[in-house]
Length: 353
Image (tube, rainbow, N blue to C red; front, side):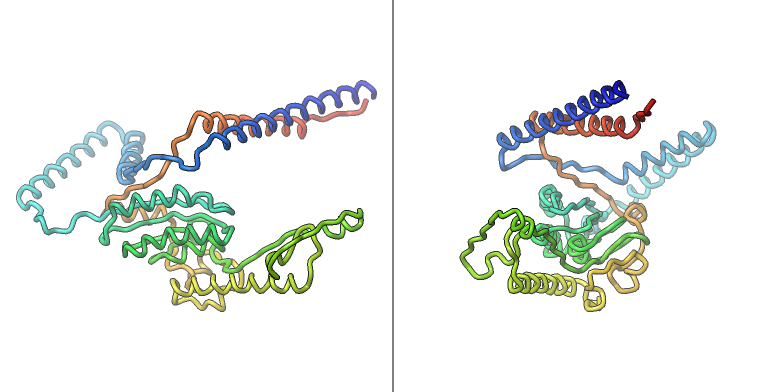
C-alpha cells in the first residue's frame, strides 16, 4: 500500500510539473511575442483557381480508375474536342464588344466569439473589389455561431462594401450562421444553406456572475465609483440594484431592435416578429420562413457554376515573424504534450494489492 502511494505520488508530481512547465513556457513566449509584435501586420493575397482543382481531381480519378486503352481513347477525344474549338475560334474570332467569361471570387469566414477573422476578411474584400465588376459574383462561405455585437457589426460592414459596388453576392452556410453570423448572412442577394445547417438566433444575450454575497460573507468591501447615472448598470463584484438591472435589460432590448431592423432591411420577405425570438432553424425550416433562399451546399453550388465561370478562391495570409512561428510551434507542442499527459492520467490504472 505504501509503495503504491509512493509510485502514484511520484507519477502525479511529474505530470503536474510537466503541465506547469508547458504553461510557463507558452505564457512566456506569448508575452515576449506580444511585446515585440507591431500593431500593423503585412501579408499576401493567395489565389487558387478552383476550376483547375476540379480538373486535377477528375484527372486523378481517371488515372486511378480507367485502364490504358480507356485512357488513350479519352485523351484522343479530348484532343479532338480542343482542335475543333480552336478551329471554331479561328473561324469566328470573338468580337471586342462580346462579354467576357464571368468570374466568381470565393471568400471564407470562420467566425468565433470575437469575429477574429474580420482582419484577414477585410483584406480579402479589398483585394476582390480591385478586380470584381458588376458582371462577376462574390461567394462567401460563412460559418459562425455569433458573438460580440460590435465585432460582428464590423464584419457585416465589410460585406456591405460589396453591396455598395453592386456586385452580386451569394452567401453559403454549410453548418451554422446564427446570431451575429446571421447578421452577416442576411446581407446576401442569394442566401444558400445546407439542409441541416443552423441559421437564425436573432436575439441578444448577456450573462455575468455576481460575487457580492460571497464578498459580503467574508467581510470584503468592493466599491464601484462612477460618474454618470448609468455608467455601470450591472457589476460582477458590487451590489446590483433593480434600477441598474432594468436599465441593462432596456439596453439589451434596444440592441435587439437594431438587430431586427437590420435583418428586415435586407430580408424584406421575412416576418421579423415571427423569427426574431432567438430561436434557431435548420435549413429546411429556415427556407419555409424565408430566412434562406435555397437548400444546397457550397460545394455543389460552385461545381455547378464552374462550367460557366472562372472561379477564384481568395485568401489573405499574414506574414509571420520568427517569434510568431516559434510561438505557434510551442503552443502546438504544448497542446500535444498536455493531451498525452492527460491521456496517461486517464488510462493508467492503479490497483490496491
